[in-house]
Picture 1 (cartoon, rainbow, N blue to C red):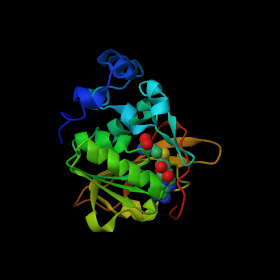
Picture 2 (picture 1 turned 30 degrees about the vertical axis):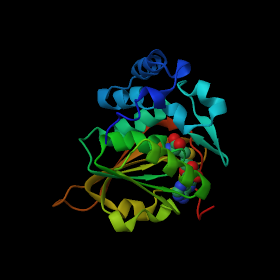
Picture 3 (picture 1 turned 180 degrees about the vertical axis):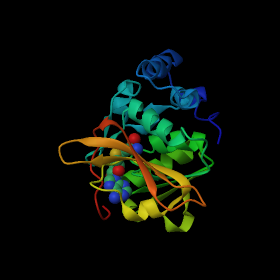
Picture 4 (picture 1 turned 60 degrees about the vertical axis):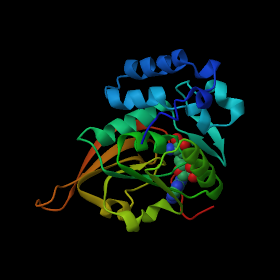
Length: 229
Ligand code: SAH
């Protein structure tokens, strides 16, 4: 995937999307303790304003989540970077499954860092918009589907990485099953009073099957819902 078109001045626009504004966001992410230069570079270059409504575009490079319609939000850049870093920490990934495409922004970040990205969204209208945006950015290593992410995407499983961008109350069984040996899943879990970001790592091939859990940090996500809309 090339970011060349995404960074074309005609696509970038002017003013609020200037390289200074983006650099400020990159500096905030560094100040917040993020350390993966490759991830920060992608966030520095990717035109986030193209993933939200024009009325909110002036806020695109603030480090905050923003509404994208249908009661959903585009994740905060810090959280996008944090989850991507957590997924990539143990080494590069070939195939990644994302659950909760939303605006498509996190999908585009993953597409810049993994060989192939698959993403499932339950709200048809959001999925269609994300498809248009990613096509306009010529992101060819991405495949999107309208469906309930609880079922994963059997056709392309197993995945080296799975990233879930909505909070579940337990680890969805079919997603864990679709992880490749040694693969990892990063997901927010709703523990009732609070949500926590968790990394689940499947044991490598040749070892006794099992999963290792790490609790990363407290988070706030919209819920992972069942069915499609
Ligand atoms: N990564 C997205 C986050 C969007 S918010 C972004 O930054 O834009 C989480 C998304 O998960 C919402 O779009 C919501 O509709 C979707 N979602 C919730 N439950 C889902 C499910 N079971 N399957 C697929 N998508 C789901």
